[in-house]
Structures are given as C-alpha cells and as structure tokens.
Image (cartoon, rainbow, N blue to C red; front, side):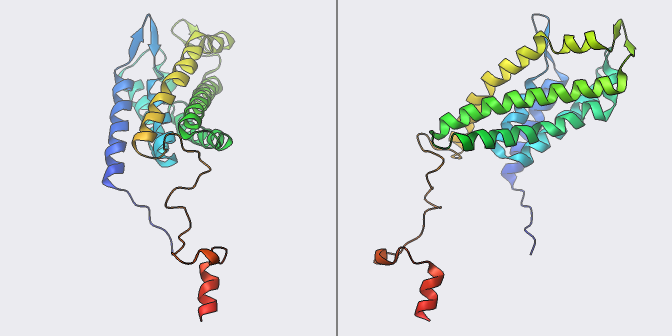
Amino acid sequence: MKKRLKITTNDIAVASIFLALILLFVFVPINIFGIDIAFIPLIAIFIAANVRGLGMGLFSGVCFGLASLAASFLRPTVFSPIFHNPLVSVVPRMIIPITTYYTFRFVKHLLRRSPQEVSASIASACSAVVGVVTNTALVVSMIVAFNFGKTYGDTVIGGAFVLGLLGVNFLIEVLSCAVITPGICVGLRLALRIDKKGRRDQEPTDDEKPNVEKGDSSDSGESISEKKEREA
C-alpha cells in the first residue's frame, strides 16, 4: 500500500513564508556600495532544505527560479533577455536544494560524534558554500551555452564576462552565505527540536530507544517476535 504524501497546515504556512521572502528579495533587490546583493533568496533555499527537508527546499528553489523568470520580464534590464530562457533562470535553482540538502546530511553524518549544534553549524556552512557554487556554476554555464558571442548593451558574452561574474561578487556571496546561514539554521533546528543542544547524533532519542517492559531485564537480548513464538 502506497504511503500518501501528507501536507499539513504547518507545511503550508512555512512554505508561504519562504515564498514571501523569495518574492520580496527578487522583486525588491538590495544594493550596497554599488554591489547588487542578489544572493539573499539563496539563503532562503538553504534554510528550507537544511531545516525543513528536501521537499521544502525544492519548493523554494522552484519559486526562486520562477520569480527570476518573472522578474526578467517585469523588471527588464540589459541582461534580462538572457533570463527569459527557463534553462538559465529556473533549472539551476531547482538543482540548488538537492546539492545543499545532501551536503548538509553528509557533513552532519561525518560529525555525528560532535554535539548536534556544532555539527549542524558546520554542515550548514558547507552546504551554503556548495549551494552558491552550484548556482553560479550552472547559471554561468547556461548563459555561456546559449549566449556565447552575443552582445547585450556594451557587453559581449565571453571569457571576460565569465571572469567578471566569478570575481568579487562571487566571493561576497560565498562568504556571506557561509556566515549567515549556519546561525539561522542552527537556531531554527534547536527551536523546532530537530536537534537538541549538547546531544550527539549517534545517541538515540526517547522514541528510538527499545521499549523493554519492567521485570524483563533478563530477557533484554530477546526480541519481541521471539517472545511471542516462545509464549505460543
């Protein structure tokens, strides 16, 4: 019998919050010292994947991609035609939560002997770096694949353009996401009791501990099924 996908009101509320944040930061860009801070929606994807799981991460990634596609029409710039192609604006954002989620799980597993808040913090930082690299690598690759040699304004899509994208802005994105993401993720995971402060991942929770009835301590090595067969 197939297990049905259950969507709770809590899931809908959380998804709405992530959607609102993504739409806000996509359509109301932040510019500091002449640098467009376009990476903030990425942080929402990292948080969604690391705190709420792959499903919520994928939802956030798709929302970011569709919002980027819509913004290329609603807020046109010189480079907007590049992002009219969904393979440039949407598909790379769908891959981000996948690499982010599995990087988080892998690093957290490697650090399972550490306190959960420590392993979650390091795993969040690593997953954020992988997420930024995934986004930049895929978007730049798609731009070059579909627009190499074309001219937009005074800019020719070529080697110099790619090097410019991989310059200061890229380093700012990597460092900012690696610093901001862990604090939010760890705080939410502790608040939602996904992790418990000071506890190690290898330690079983109360729900995972074997249920041994009182007075049966001598039979602790015997499974429940073996007891039923013996009693029968």
